Structure formats: structure tokens, C-alpha cells
Image (cartoon, rainbow, N blue to C red):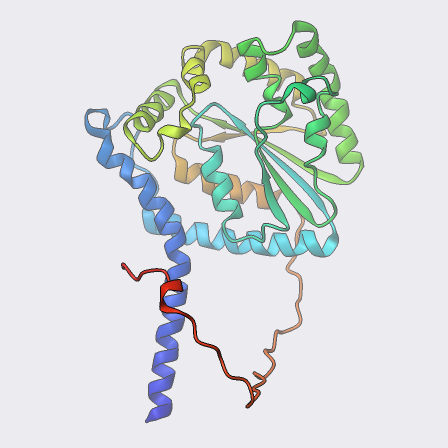
Length: 306
């Protein structure tokens, strides 16, 4: 009877642990869902119905399981992987990156999101500050914006000269080919949204106190320059979409579909295989009869408010 009770208790603890893991993703989705409550008269601007929630979760967890296998393969084979995420402000790059990294080891898969260059960095070779973030063998680096800033925001906002802009287009294919020849797997994604969708997402950020920080003065200025950014994107794709280093366009109007499509495509780009691991066996707990645990003062504990 005691054994059965213990087994039931253990199963309940296992179920709770699994539920806690799933709650991480549910928390992110509930955060997205808060926008619906804030939408008000903006309801409907973001398009038609999204993918069924159950289908979304099932596919996301399946794909995240495959990402774990990919991570193991990258580490085991000492592969170097670089993934670039580009797109307009609010296109959903950050949300996709969160779902990719959510179950992975941050020592193997890390995100590089560089701020604007400082005075010293502005005098360096343009690619220099990005090189410092490239992976070693057994690592994956996701660039949340990349060296393509020069072809986008720097071009549109006048932060680079015409000569620097043209030199970028001459240099970037050579730079990327050098990475590829060195054994780096390079994948480039452009997250594409419509004019109306960006307007809707910006409006939601303005209304949402938890996301207002995402809307910088630069984002507001970029909104008024939609057509200039479109021309800059078209020039970028024309000059840098090469057979060796192609661009992949992610239709990102529907965030959930965009995440699933991007992750599935990312997995398809690499010939990863499941790596066999030795089974983990926990050693028996060593107990020393002479050890006495010292008392902890009650005032050191965080108050139990919940």
C-alpha cells in the first residue's frame, strides 16, 4: 500500500514537472494574448485567424525536441553555425529566436544582439565587431540583426556614407564566403510583414505598458520611412542573395506560423543526426552520520507571499 502511494506521488510530481516546463511556452503565449485585450478598436488589423493553438503547441514542442538533437550534433561534430535574423521592426525576429533558444544550452547556442557602435568601433573595419561574436567549433550563434545593419538602418537613416554603403556590398559576399570556406554554416532569414501589420504591432506596443520599451525613437522614425526601407531591402537582396549564401524569406504576418516555418526550415538546412549518449545513472547519495546541518535564520528566507 505504501509503495503504491509513493508511486502515485512520484507520478504526480513528474506530471507537475512536465507541466512547469510547458508553462514556460504557455507564459510566452499568454503574453502575446494580452495584445488581444488591448486591441480595442484596432481588432482585426493583424489579419485572419491564426493556426490552431493545439496544433501550434504540438508542432512547437516537436520542433524544439529536434533542435535539442541539432544542438547535440553541432557539439559532437564541432560544427560552427551562424544564423542571421533580419527584418523590419516588430517583424517577430525576437519571438522566433526565443522559441529556438528556449530549450537549448546557452553555452552552446547564444544570441548576439549588438548595440549601436561606439566611437572606437566606428573607426574599425566594419565587420570587426561582428567577428568577435562568431562561433567556435560546437557552437551556434543567432544574430538578432547583423552586419546587414549597414544595408538597412544605416543606409536609410544616413549613418553611413555612400562610399561605405557601396563598399559593404563589395565586401559582404567575400566576407560570407570566407566564413563558409572556413567551415561555418551560414543561414540568413528575412522576416517579412506588411505595412498594415507593422502599423498594428506598433499600435499595440504603444498601448501595452510591458512592451513600450520595445518602441524606440528610431523605430518611430523608421515607421515614417517604410518605402525607403523597402528600397533598401530590395537593394540588399539583389546584391547579397548569392548561390553560396542565399536569403530565405519568412512570411511573418502570422507570428505562430512564422516561428514554426522558420524552425522547421532551419532544421532542414543541416544534416544533423541523433547523437547516441551513454545512459546517465545517478550514484547513490553518500550520507555521513557525523554531518549535522546548521540552522538558517528565518529572516534570511524570502517571504512566502504566494
